[in-house]
Image 1 (tube, rainbow, N blue to C red):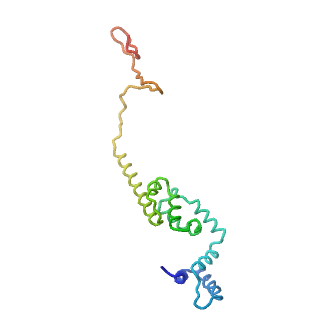
Image 2 (image 1 turned 30 degrees about the vertical axis):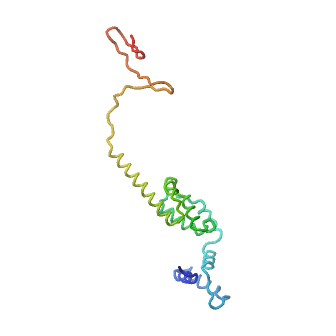
Image 3 (image 1 turned 45 degrees about the vertical axis):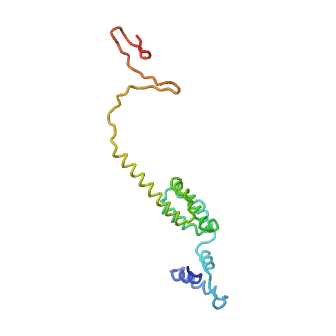
Length: 193
């Protein structure tokens, strides 16, 4: 891994336009009171950057958005991207990898969550991979079912079964048209004349 000093230098190189100008002037002000050989820590840089570009009220709104985040209609990939984007505003809610994975899992759609929760995955990156695989498997199963359903022949002829009447708690009674024999009409219930 990189040292704090290396992280700050690298990010400073990537800042452009307004952010680059801001950091150059802010860094000079921060270094005024520092002893030779001291450097600006990563935590200090992040705090300064957030204070300037993400005001407190905005950070609080993003933290609330993170708390309420669920997958909904998003794919696992989209949900993961949104989760990662908002997680940096709610580091107090996910202080470690296990908490991060747990919160992500709790926001998954129930069908995907059912498939991954029994695995008890504590690593966020691994959980996202497994959830994506589960989602892909569900889509493949659904597509195969739809294909099979479309390929099944549909009955296009009317049923030739006699009409039946069923009432709750009673036995099934069939209604037949009255038949006439040589001696007269037959009772549809008992079959007698």
